[in-house]
Length: 236
Image 1 (tube, one colour):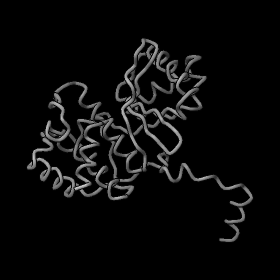
Image 2 (cartoon, helix red, strand yellow):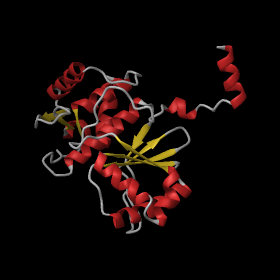
Image 3 (cartoon, rainbow, N blue to C red):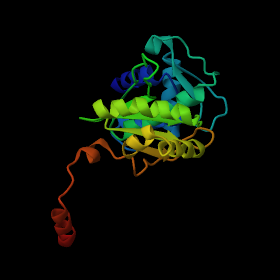
Image 4 (tube, rainbow, N blue to C red):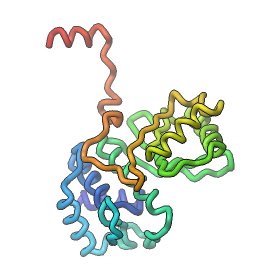
């Protein structure tokens, strides 16, 4: 099925995810801005696992089973789901799934080639803009943020429309503090969005897109002129 092929393409990007994120991607492929039911996602996983395209393990996480594509599915070896970085990888896939539901394309960022560069966790693509995405589950040291902000400044001046940090509450506080504590942060602060969406366990819950995550259509639509907007309210 076309949808199965598209899901395998998605797995080729994120590699490791969970059932809750699969709900969102399946919903996006239906043209929805909301997820399918957990039962539907589990049924899809069972069918694809029987066919040998995915595998999964239940480690008791809040987001459901950890799911990955097999070599048959994406031509890559099985990931080590017991690594410390798995929680972060799943959070990135969660973010990717939400952006898919809002109509964005997604790609991995290019690997940093020099010490002064920084590889973002993902790149969300609109029709004519690029958004760099950082998933921040654990706060970094201030000096590390200063270097990252310096790298982002160059990219914001040349290729990206904005940087979006998606954080746990503790990490969000650290990012906001770092933005105001250095020249590099202050210069780019107006083009950096920081949102606390993950709980301390790295779960982004809920079945509704947040208000700040505008769909591609909403973001691309030209704003009404003030007079036209006021007239529309009066006519209504």
